[in-house]
Image (cartoon, rainbow, N blue to C red; front, side, top):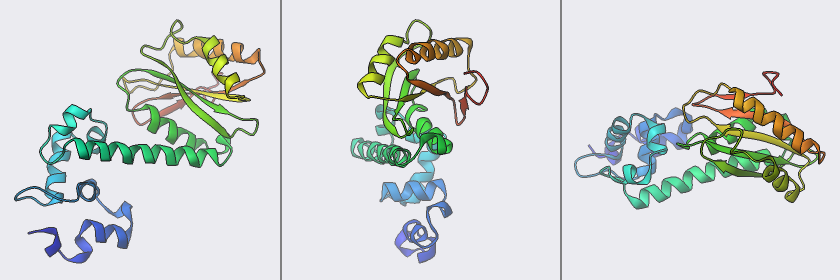
Length: 224
């Protein structure tokens, strides 16, 4: 039965407008994104099949272009549309942070860093540069690859902080393994950067480790 023949309160789009997006299942939300199904399948049927094929909503959203486009009912246009939606979500989080004190919004800070860094298959080291009122100036991804004491260069971090005229910095990097526990290398990098930035009167406020759905703060652990 086509979705247009369903009771209006059960159609995904009408249900969202009536009850809000939180009332919809993953398949219903994905069906709205897909807009149409394929021959013999509604958008909801197709959405359920795609969620099963990818193993859930998150793997689908984070799939590489080639894997995503290979599925029936998807393609390059849908991939581009999805990337635009995800980027709008990230920018919305950043604008929310930029309007206020980053330290007064720790949950927003964590959510933004998680949205920005969690999906990478390799390690990425980033700096959230803040002004004197701890408002966000910029988030810069500075180093890629295996993050250790030799691959993160304090001079580059200091140079970028000065270029932004930053008063403070929040460090962040992801653990592609999904385990957010800080390593000894993470602690050493943090102290090296604190010392380097301290020489030019820029404070390091925290270092967040981004894991699989979990964000660990070194400041909260007393490791700063």
